[in-house]
Length: 137
Image: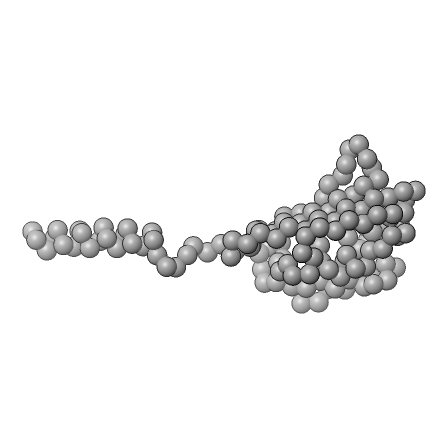
């Protein structure tokens, strides 16, 4: 009888301690929005056309219903180490040419992840908007 009480107490203690373990639960990186790299932002310049910006940055994640001349690109990464990285780029157009480019967030030091949660990669964009972009792992 006394051995069974000790065994039950041992199992209860182990199950309670396992919930407060030093080992944490696996967490994935959660990227949301447009992937924004420092190379992409360095490539875009005032005077570029909408097509050139689409080629470099892709389609904007936010389209302003009241002002079609502003494109907003937003990226948020909830990293598995509980850090949050936020980047934003707003491009204002006049006569289909970029006139103002606003940047916000740390564009250089954000880790990049594949949308499937795979290992980090770095995307390289060609500085010439007319030439094809390449991606290297």
